[in-house]
Length: 279
Image 1 (tube, rainbow, N blue to C red):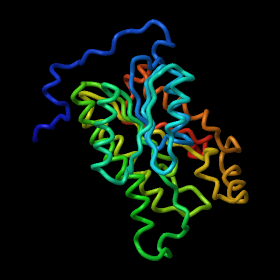
Image 2: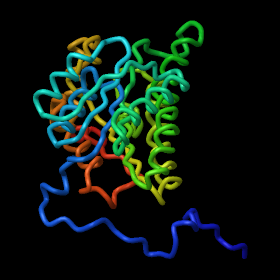
Image 3: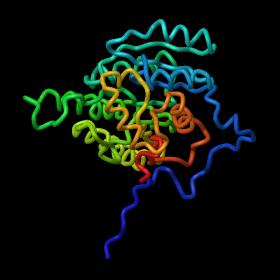
Image 4: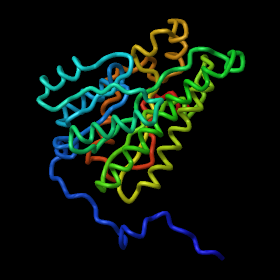
């Protein structure tokens, strides 16, 4: 029988590995003081709520935007919570630009400890085989999947150099199930891939960093403004808690995965979906 190859990097040394330093208070476990967090797609919606929560927890924060400038929001967060916050413009679809911005953030802040790959767009065109051409599919996959990989590859090198880090990917319950009544095959495909990307990177990076995903359900944000009320009523009927979530109901999961409270959590996807995937 052939010898089973272990994924563990032999350079790490003998097992078991040492655990994290013990902290005596739960608030210390969840504190982000002294850490640097970078959140893509954070000029509004889920991303901004996460960036603000991290600032509240004491982290210095790099906010990312593309079409909606966020310098004023960054300045406001910095003044409100007495932490360093800066805004960076970046087209996530361009790997060279992603690499440049992440390198600049590391230079400006001295390090990156937490990276949230959150930027994404919904599919709004219905049955995908009826859409003319290929641009719509490519746009979804480029931003919702390829952009995540570009960020992960670049920040992963920083994590490996530092011997620590937490990557959090915003996936979706649509990566676990096919939600109805909307037809959104490209989006479902991208988010499912993001979940498996998180699991795969968690194994690759186990010697030096953690990787997890968060899978939100229906959330009240600007990204869903195009959806008619009749469709949302169907969503509410299919969600056991009977409603959409407020963004504040998501940030606890992001804080957990960013903090020292989750140092033994990697390769998972946390569903925050009001029970939609439970039945």
